[in-house]
Image (cartoon, rainbow, N blue to C red):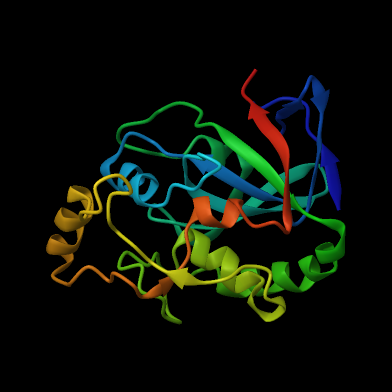
Length: 213
């Protein structure tokens, strides 16, 4: 399913790439840039890639009739299916405005896996958010949610997680404070995934940035 989006307000949005409108399709992956809250900045700081993206959140598109939804896992809602507007304008204590969102699409050879991945994603909705980022079967975090949706077909890969500042090699203070509050050790080296790493997947192609015009 697909939908050509026109305006960001309400159900629709404008996606521009070199001045051209883009048609969002079911299975497209949206990456949202970091906010100013401590957790979002901590995620971005330790997951930078050579592409220099600054993503701290992601979800999968479902187009249904004239509506666009995003399936994702987030602290405010757990694993859920939300409107596009709710995804681009999340309820946040420090950010009240549109947050830059970039759309990616699986390359043609891999789009055959989308239908089953969407079904898997819907089965995972209703689960709580995984604040520990240690993968388990009872809660999910954003990239984990998308990874598991496509897990059967090995679209995305897991890698050892790091919580260290990419420039200093030391644990980012935000993560030190975060895991101290959880009462657990930082899970350095455990298998996981993150939005910046998944955006660098060669099986994806970038479409463009959602415009809030």
